[in-house]
Image (cartoon, rainbow, N blue to C red):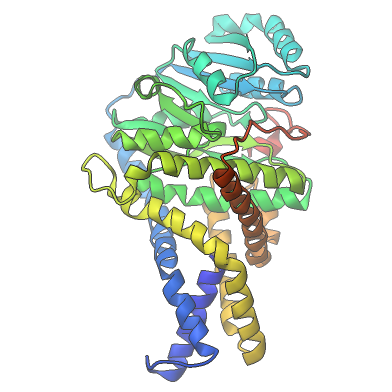
Length: 443
């Protein structure tokens, strides 16, 4: 996106200076070629940015039209594999929502650390909570992966709405209520929550915090068109009957959450995003772990695209046109451009230095900083993101670094795809988030 903004800005400056659209030669032609190559992505960016800003109006209208005013029963599933550091905080945060008719199912997927002891001790000491409307159930199963763990928990789930949350996350007190509120129509099959990186001790964690704010902001646009195809398992809500209709999570795809939301869309259901349903997650705190996390995400998304390739450019009336004609094709096109980004970045930086034309670059930096500030200000937890204001002037650099991490994940994913290698549920060193109810997280 940095390259796209630079290319368009530079070309506009050039054309304005020449007042004609005559063919250009030499170095100037680079900007025009890049403009043509990147224009589809830029059009998508501007369209989504506009739609995202209109999201509050659309959501307010939907809530007023909602016919189901009763409190739907909820089952929260917490799959865990070697999560002794944060599992108790996660369970407490769900209980602190005080949502009525709440069932919590913890699934220990064959952990080799102290996860089992942590959970059983907590449940034994909190049995008195059950009469208040919350029930705690614990499943200790042999290691089989996250999808199998979730499917096993689905057999025990009784809630009309099923919510999944990772065992390294902390749930905001209003998260469940705000997620459930989005199921205002029977056509809504799944809802994504707003995931925020809660650990902010290191620069690499700040970078992820900014990236999440940027990325989740655009889910507002997808929600306007009922097509949120990436609903991460850290903050996902589903109609239980829809999950049953889908036949459960796919064991063969490492990102079972993305595959499920895409599959739900393929069956004609709507998916939405609840910006005020906040879940704090722990982002990787070292470079190697971050690279491995993005490998899992990238590889799983590629497998999902392959499985649901029939959605691309589909004109089937049950499929959402925004999803099939723009969102999915542009996602693949963006991966193609990611492969070329290093060459394009080098080209326009060389051009900038040789021509001493720094105005387009300065404009791009200003645009990204302004957009970033707007995204922070409209976030439901803007007070929590105050630290990101310091990063706004260098947002372009942060996004470029994250793009390079995405690039290595793309190369590794393509290699695995060619060699047909599987990828297992990964684990990295956890340091834990602040305790549930801490003001640093809930503000």
